[in-house]
Image (cartoon, rainbow, N blue to C red; front, side, top):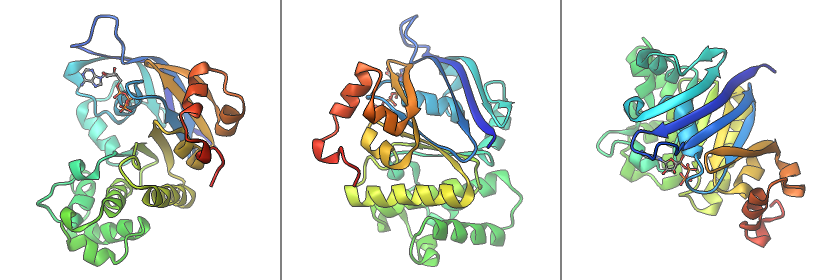
Length: 266
Ligand SMILES: Nc1ncnc2c1ncn2[C@@H]1O[C@H](COP(=O)(O)OP(=O)(O)OP(=O)(O)O)[C@@H](O)[C@H]1O
């Protein structure tokens, strides 16, 4: 399988931060097409800023960014904002922790799921609806026609996260950036969403960069994991190796932070 994403010596500093305080400080890693890679680390370690750098969602005027990020061989850090929007409409999508903050409460679900098609493609209204219903079905929402017409407050948290996943996959991205997508959900729903991501990965070959502070969740989904601490990448490897023989004290602490009953895979 070919390489999809390459991040090289990525450094990000917010303009309002102290001069040598890099939120991301020399991070390098790569992802293959169709791979599910876990990115773990404690709060503030730089996971979200790394994901936002890849997705082009960092407020460019407020940050200093150095290094290189290529997606399918294309340098993202050199793209204009318009080029980045095009990439967001085809190559890459994101899902965040809180679906409620990403959805407009006064707009029905359908148009929100279709939004990237409306912005980035010439699909007709009927084609957009067809693709939206297809994406809602792929995200395993029961009765997509009914969900299409509902407002966000009429759906549960788990269903809303499925709606966000539908909105992310409608553009058939090669890479999904999922930043703590299950953290706000209860354990049962969390497991269902992980299963859904695995299914989408298997069926469409969409690669997933899965970000979590929870190593146990990452273990259930990913084969390989990278660990960040204070903006740096401190460990990388197959997830089972990391559990068996962590190289860093920090990784050992992350493992120790998992409640004992969760150490075994359920
Ligand atoms: N808008 C901002 N302005 C200034 N500093 C910021 C901003 N956003 C993030 N940072 C800083 O960047 C660093 C990395 O934050 P980041 O959100 O990437 O961590 P994280 O690992 O994703 O944590 P969490 O799990 O809590 O989301 C932190 O030190 C944070 O204070």
